[in-house]
Image (tube, rainbow, N blue to C red; front, side, top):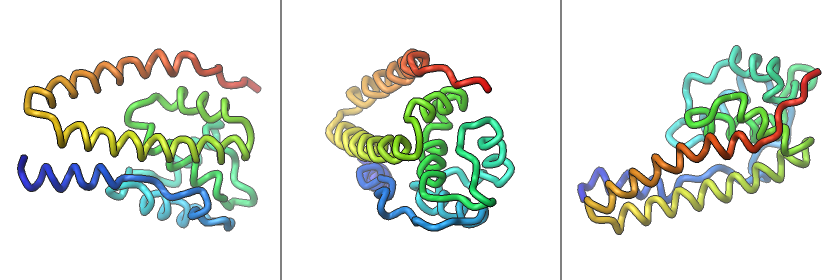
Length: 164
């Protein structure tokens, strides 16, 4: 294993999102929420997240609307989950996932669970890849691709978004 691969696996092993209590419990403006989202995501996250995208997520009811143009802890938590899931899941499925959580307390509980599973998954993948032979890594990649395909079925089991 090369030094670069070891560094990547160490980074993956330590990858996590901040605790709910670490997220600011303040009313934040758009530029602040964008900056924090990028700062909290591993590797700087999706640097292409823009105010227009956040506004569209609010219009599509993926995110709750801001209160007097200010965003809170639940918005930041939802954005962290959204930016993490967006590369592997359609926005409509993420919307259904968030709606299945219920209100603000639901987002908090979902974020706490998501954070825990996200950290555990990263640690497990890093451990498996560290211990795997080259052949084992190929098999692991195939298993990961199969799991990605199964995600579509899992998303289909989520309730449909409410139409108003």
